[in-house]
Image 1 (cartoon, rainbow, N blue to C red):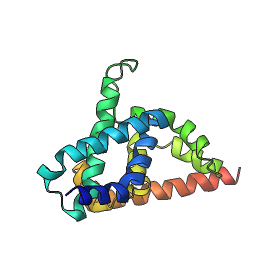
Image 2: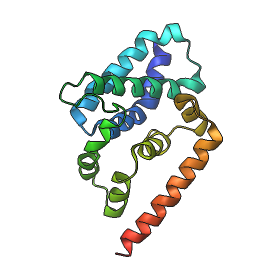
Image 3: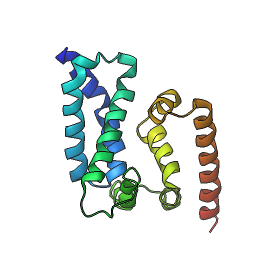
Length: 165
C-alpha cells in the first residue's frame, strides 16, 4: 500500500505544487501546504481506497480544501473575503519569479476574474480533465468546457490587443 502511495506522490507532486503555488504566491507557504496535503492524503489513503484513475482529482480536492482552510486561518486577512480567491493577489510575484517571457500573458492572467483564474488554474496549471473539474466544483461538464473556451477566446483577444500596443 505504501508503494502505491509513493507512486501517486511521485506522479502528482509537481501538479499539486503548481496548483498551490498559483493560489498562494509564496514558495514558503506552498512548501508547508503541500506537505500538509500529502500528510492528509497518506492518513486517509488506505481508508479511502482511491481508484488509480481518481487519484489526481482526489489530491486536488484535498489541496483545494487545504488552501481554503489556510486562508480562513490567516488572521491578517479581512474577515468576509472569499478565502478561495485571496491567493490570487500574490500571483504577480510568482509570475515574475518563474520568468514568464510574455508580459501580455501575465497582464491578462492577472486581470481575469477570480472565477476565471480558478478555471485556468484547474485546467492548465493543475492539469485536470473537465470531468474532474466538474466533480470538484459540482458543475456541469459541458458548461465548464464552454466557460473555458470563452475564457481562452477572451484571453486571445486581450493578448492580441496588448501585443498591438
